[in-house]
Image (cartoon, rainbow, N blue to C red; front, top):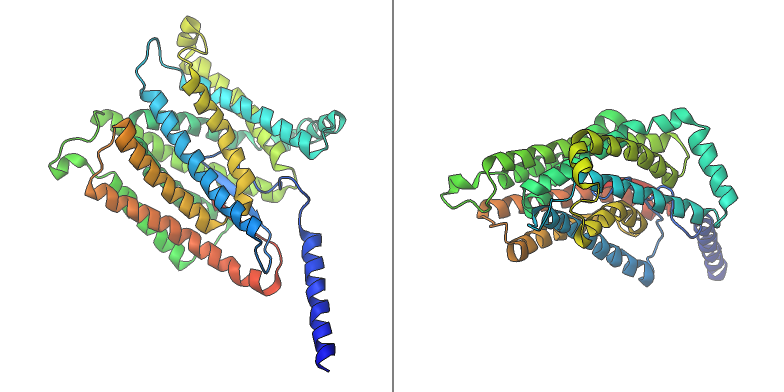
Length: 393
């Protein structure tokens, strides 16, 4: 009797394992596990199973380290490159955006080439069928692409006028804008803790932007009030554009079965066109005088590479992480940016009000991600089926 029951349980376990293995994707990158840019929306696909292997656990913490390194290094190198006093003219932010888009297109082409077993015939057929033969589907990407191009230029303006720590904390306002656009455009419902986290987030960002002059101390940076206002305005517009473009892109992905790498190629093509228009409209005279690559050095090329690779690196590693780990990465990135900005760049003098605001922003990030993780946990533990959660970087 006991033996027959035990045999029945073992058969059920084998059936579950066989079902999970059939559902697991083939080696390679999932088409859902990507987002169009580093500083923007990302789509997480996680395969849930009753137990986590040691290798999967190591990949989780490795992904945490990669996310922290990428986010922190991009912000700090971009800030340093925009404030570095060198000989000759400073490089054009508009040209850096164009080069980053071009590099993204090349990387995505290589990924599509890899996904189709390095076949030029298949690559040519896929690009022709998905891009040229579907003009209306391709034109849908013009809206988010134009917004992302504007956003990337705004981030250069923000980091030219704000220190890295203030930028990092204030840019977390994109969590609020993304949530609001998700509710209005996708019909997503937020829980009590998520609404509470958004309220805490707004409070924390308000404290971070609290004027330091009112505290009776000297200004922490040599920036003028006008340049600080310009930086804050640029980052606020970038937060709203990030939220709208990310949710719009997510809606397009949900409505079609197209590869996300092909979608990124479409985004990059429009971004390349919009970026070139920006170069010649706003910096045309400077380009004619000193060329497109004026002021470029090794640091500038590092910024371009980090901006191009950022979203793709996150896409490659985020499938091993979850909302809690992403909260860790955001928090650690803010802390590292603050420390490096204070000790190395020497352009930031934190106050007690800033620290209080930063702590509230970090807590809001954890609280917002914690409820999303808790909502998916019961279903994972009950039926072991793969679940898809959408979250933001």
